[in-house]
Image (cartoon, rainbow, N blue to C red; front, side):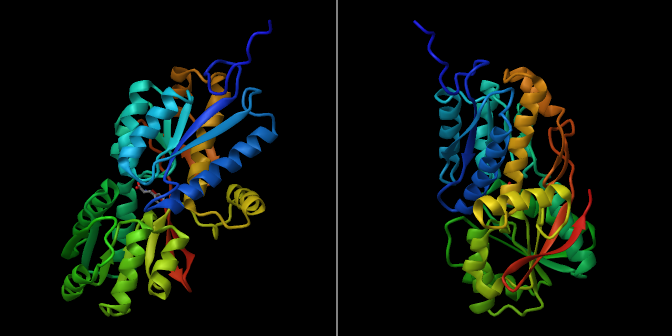
Length: 367
Ligand code: PHE
């Protein structure tokens, strides 16, 4: 009898190469997962059209973490034990990556988060990598922007008490803004799922800040911006500032024109011309008929780090693949990716201003 063909994901040197994804396809931050999946699907399609990796077809298997930590851990277990993936792309939210990373580390399956920016994620171990810059940089970018560009001296900070990303980024902003000579006049917190921010916004308004830093995700930020303008009556000259977590088309659905005039840091802007960005946008538009956001770009880059490294290592074997990812050098969509000894890339950030309920490139800040 013929020997049975190897099943997908059997981790031998023959069958399809199966990459896992731990993504928030549903729940509070679902646009992040949907964009990320589109980014990876595009790369896999491009790679397979050119004959795959090591002559083998690449398959991307996504588990929905429903935007939660518990489902992120379950997803990691399932992908590793059942699907026998050779590497994982994800998660998105830092708290969710922190839930999945110990499982990948323990199993020695390389995990590359496209977008998690909390430093603790890659500190989990030597099998955990990322494509994004980290929050100590991003938070400093926005604190310096507040001090130098906006000439702010008084800032308020609103954080999600359940999010490692939000707390970490808020702390960096506070440290840098204070070191710049500024004062934090109000600090309030909320949790994802809250929908009424009128009380804390009134507290913040009464403290008379020049800027309000809201390092949270679009689901809460959209409502906060809306209620700040329409319910609490913030003066237009008070600027709201945020981080990459604002990057979603849903922000504008939730905030409407209340998002206009405010600023956030991000990993990439389609307005910035580079050969890599242009090729990515053209291919993404052709496949999906929309302009990719940073989540799509970062997930594309994270998957590219994995697939490039498999080709280079000549194997999907975990220790060799780990070493190849650690040494990867890519002219990626979101910038040059070369990891430091902490498995973090050192890359530029862009500052985005919201105009006419759209993101507009404002400036680039280099590390
Ligand atoms: N940086 C966020 C986190 O660590 C995730 C994110 C990245 C969200 C990019 C939007 C865009 O939780």
